[in-house]
Image (cartoon, rainbow, N blue to C red; front, side):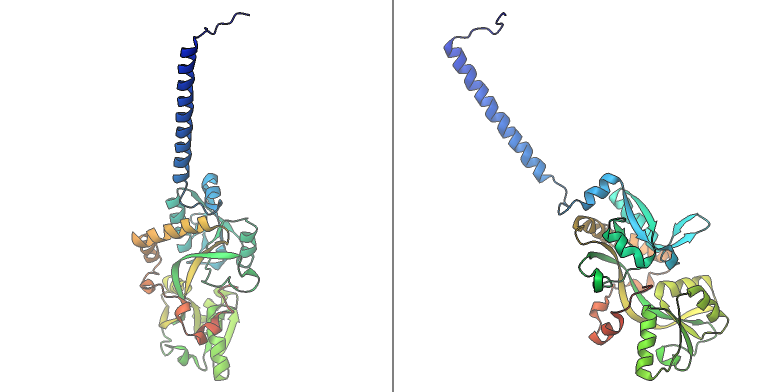
Length: 314
């Protein structure tokens, strides 16, 4: 076999060796610089892989419950898709992350398990601040920044204006959704006043609305969005009195999904700053009560003791 590599004199071989060594050193330095650059340009959300997984997938799976109804989340027969102010917030967050939102309808009580087992990435479903920080769910999840401050409101017929506060409900027939914040208020009031309110508790909201309309009930204590929704769709109803037990609504993610939480928090912060959140809530007539997102954590301990065991639609 022929040797096609030319023979080089010792001085030339020495010079060539020096050049190759220098090239190897420079190459090594270059690779080292590239390695440093790649570390420096790592994503901002590097605590875990949750955001990366969602971004690579191209969509975020959002646990919702359309049975909660308007204006939170409901099935719109006209569009043949979900609707509601929470849906619009989900869509806006996803748009800012440049991914697709995929609502997955799951019964409200089953949602925490679905989140823990990673069937969904996030819950946006009338979840109250701190509500999953007790019992079996304690320590499993983390909350995003709030997107809405809710409260309990008194809903009456327009001709029933003699009721303006809980004090005026003594002897009256008052409907509440079972295990709701409104139920907590009425039950605590009755406990302290010897069952002064004639309380009617049910999970069938639509039936109670009909009873209020037909004068079988004198008033209802409802989530503010639900009360506003009823007034919007029935001009014979009005809301009276001050908001009761303000509490913030948050989205929920698994405790290890810090990067996803930070991304959602960033989107919500931007939505507040550029007015998009205000725009969404105004469209659903929910902005007036949002001048300050005051939390129940600022309320007296005596009030917190009343509402802590309860959460809406539990």
